[in-house]
Amino acid sequence: MVNQNNSTSGIQNQPSADDKNLMSIAQYLKDAQSSHKRSIPPLEQWHPKHCGNMDLKVKANGEWWHEGQLIKRQALLDLFSTVLWKEDGRFYLKTPVEQIEIDVEDEPLLVNQVDQIEIDGQHYLQLTTTNQDIVIVDHAHPIFMREFEGDVRPYVHVRFGINALIQRHAFFHLVEYGELLENEQGNTILSLQSGDLHLQLGT
Image (tube, rainbow, N blue to C red; front, side):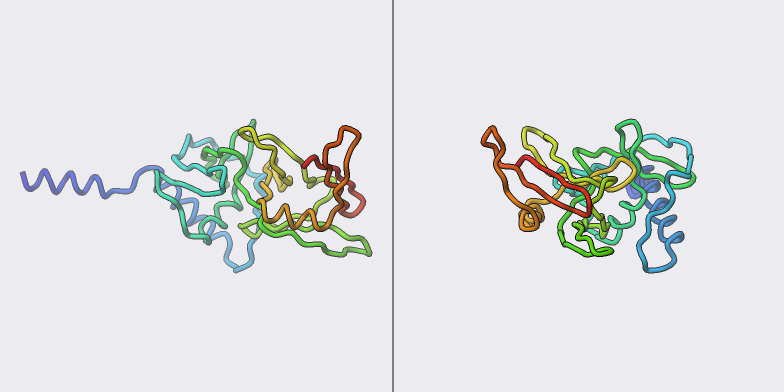
């Protein structure tokens, strides 16, 4: 009986397939990013095989949960965010050798900082995510409004079909760089300028 109990305990302590997948991706990222500078790898050039699903969920509030456990290590989240991939409406973690599907409730990135910068004499809006992605708002990276569970929320396109939700406090800061107008229907519109891109957002 003692040997059987010890055997059972050993099985329970073994890492799951999801744990192994997650750690192999983390190890790949650490090996690939030898410098301290964060960079986005050329995911569009990689064509790995699909390796099924992982019990990894990114909730609408930006929290990452793995097998029911909240991932709290920001450095790990920053690494995983660099290999986020979207294909046919589904989200994946992608490396040169594997592409594993994950569950994303809304969008996997969050904007928490808004700045205005000057480039070649023009003013641009610069948005920063919680994972240190820096997005210059332009025609390829517009801000737009979209409904999620009954609420109309602001987003910005980041890369590879992936968007970032602009958090409430960041959106209020964004309003400071724009102008609130009223359209013919009496609705409030936020007018924004970033370079030569002019945006009008329903608020």
